[in-house]
Image (tube, rainbow, N blue to C red; front, side, top):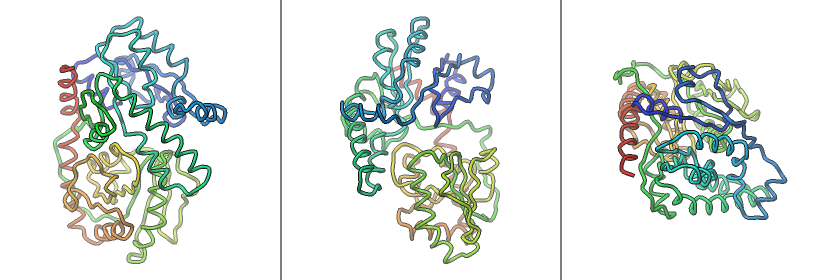
Length: 376
């Protein structure tokens, strides 16, 4: 949302932000540029999305999606209604499926085009978690929630004036589940201060995973990396080092010097961390959408080893822009190859960086989105 907002502002548009502040994504207004806060009339509303057993059972009985219900609260709807009664908008953009329950209130109080920006095909993420869960009550419960979410998603997508997924793959899935409204793919964008796509020649000296660890696909991916991939790497290279970084690091992931594993958790500066001489791993096996950290890491010149899902939507060529594998053996082999071959590592980093910076320029992305909106 932030990149798109900044892009729209830079393109000369007026933007008003009403954001949901949750435990997973808390309001951090104090860290924002005061000019940005003022220019967007930034406003945050606290939403408690923590699991509530009574609400969960209630939604289970009624058949309504608990995933969606957790995000619908009276306080947020009241603030939204106040804004809509006092301001006129050409477009209202809802960020993610979880905010779609507010669409009726918007329609009631505004003539604006209402557009859904879909960060993922949400039920696909949860279906991946179901498939990887062990048999038992937890699997049964998650499976029920996923079916409810899938039904909600397929029904609700056509209630909007347009749909903006972030990958071509997601756009195709939305069409398969019944989307008939206009669709325009708008990936995550970045602002690049210069056009320098060069990568300094260097020898990589470690492997890393960097990502928010309160997201289940990341947790499961890192678990797979630690248990199935990393032992194979260490069997060949006993000096190899793996660093795990990211907010909300689970207590089960711990530093192990004997295995060359260092867990540092949240980092003060993402850019400083990505500037280190490491190989980025993206061991994702479930979900949809686009991996923002993959874009950030590759645009910083980090050579990447990923699963196919991990770089979905990036239009990468295996062996050219990144090394891609789904099996533990092949994934480990790619890591070892980059550790042992500086020339290959630098080539992958160089070509990957150039590709990402060309494809994900925020200025180009916003320009195309605005042209699409004018057609509605």
